[in-house]
Amino acid sequence: MIQHLTEIVEEARKRGRKRLAVAYGQDSHTLAAVYDAYKEGLVEPTLYGERAVIEEICKAEGIDAGVFKIVDEKSDVKCVALAVAAVVAGEADVLMKGLVSTDKYMRGILNKEAGLFPPKGVLSHVSIVEMPCYPKLLVVSDVAVIPLPDFKQKQKQIGYLAQTARLLGIQTPKIACIAPSEQLLPNVISSTEGALLAKMADRGQLGDVIVDGPLSLDVALYKEVAEHKKVKGSSVAGDPDCLLFPNLESANVFFKAASHLCKGELAAMVMGTKVPCVLTSRGDTSKTKLYSIALACLAAK
Image (cartoon, rainbow, N blue to C red; front, side, top):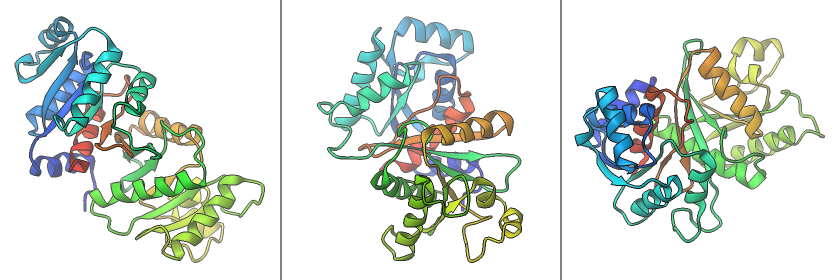
């Protein structure tokens, strides 16, 4: 079982290089991460962006620009469209966001005419968080895409969390539905839906997963807190593999607190598309981007 993000890189390397299409890949963090991914044996990269800018940054950062195939294009929106077209045509296995803003990147992915996102599909963001202050990897959703998931979307998110956990070698992942309290609060949607999802999982309606909810974050993460609050009969409380947050705000706050306050490292991708899509913040480190590339390569067919 994979227990550290570095092991994701090792496992992805075993599966051979994937063809990576990078939309507007012309910032130093992205170029450094893609270059590292190339040196690690993970990818054959194609960059869509301004050739002169790319070559200038590579020279300044000591990166060999010769390892990249560069498609010269000044427009960030056109770069996204070209990169999306490449993966849809089967010319690339993984899509990655570069310097382009998230909204432009997502519009390119969701463009019905482009053919990357299936009709009536559910797009969701899944992250893997490794923190020095916590003993295991945590798979988290959704910090970036769905502002307020409805009940059907949460069922899909549980499926995506489980798929990602299985990439780590966890066959039957334990998933905590996070809410303000471990007590069932009838007027709080995250509470009632957490309880419904747990019951559906008990009946085998969500696949090979163990789901419990509602669980407050402290009860979900720490066994001693669960015991102190007398939460009984839960195999998830104190030992989750995955956290399903009720909305983007709560997930995003946890995600950024884990990375900045807890000095955590991250890997992240968008699921629900025909190929894995790397979606990281423009401010993320090159290491986070490398781990994200490795995760998407591991998920790619």
